[in-house]
Image (spheres, rainbow, N blue to C red):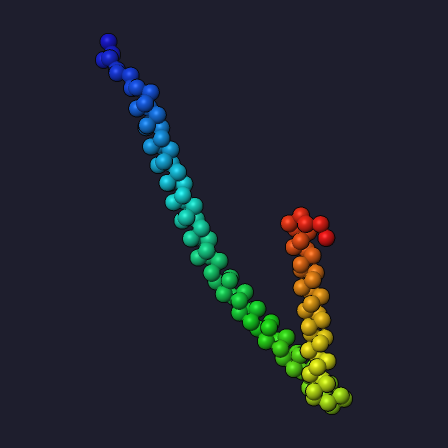
Amino acid sequence: MAPEEQEESIGTLIGRLVEDGKGYARAEIGYYRTLAASKLGEAKGGLILGAAALVIALCTVTALLVGLILSLAPLVGPGWATLIVIVAALAVSALLGWLAYKRIQRLFGSKP
């Protein structure tokens, strides 16, 4: 015959269930923290390369604008060449900014 087992009270069972739930939640949080740190470590090299590419692209745009000014300077003078290139660059920048604004507005459900 099996020894008599004492049944645990409902309160004890609920307390154990709560503690088990807390332990499970802590383990899940630890897992996702570790996963995020791992992914960030893997992405670090890519982010550095992307930042370097962005810096080089910005330098290239600067060189292009200076080249445009130098190319226009013999035709209209250095002051006018600078003004023409700056106005054109600001117009392109404003157009791109406006298009970006409209897309973001659409993304968040605002009616254009």
